[in-house]
Image 1 (cartoon, helix red, strand yellow):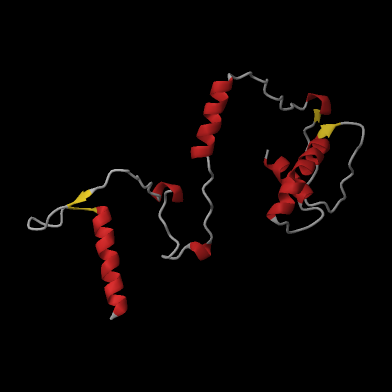
Image 2 (image 1 turned 135 degrees about the horizontal axis):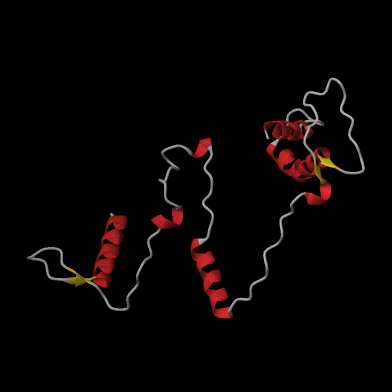
Length: 159
């Protein structure tokens, strides 16, 4: 098994010694196909040179006997279940962004949970809320507090 893996890697690096992750992922399918061709019996033969780093594997399998991945069967789904899954995916299925080294500062470090877990929803009410400031202070509504704060701001602007 190890020899097969080494043979596969020698195919990957045959054209270029150091590949980027993008180049490696692009050539992966083609490399696997070529590796299977090398270790199976079929019409074309590869002649490796004497100075080849990895020898050709001794074992071989007929190309027609190589197992393939069969696609999964299509399953019909009720429209209500489909909508339920779609709603769940839009609400909770967002991917968590990977952080880079530059983001590992105290300014941008939010913790281990996704950012949307820290958001708070604001509840608005049509009814005014009573706020008691102390035992000797009468209760005032939020609207009255806002008006008195605005008046104080105007007084300080005049001075």
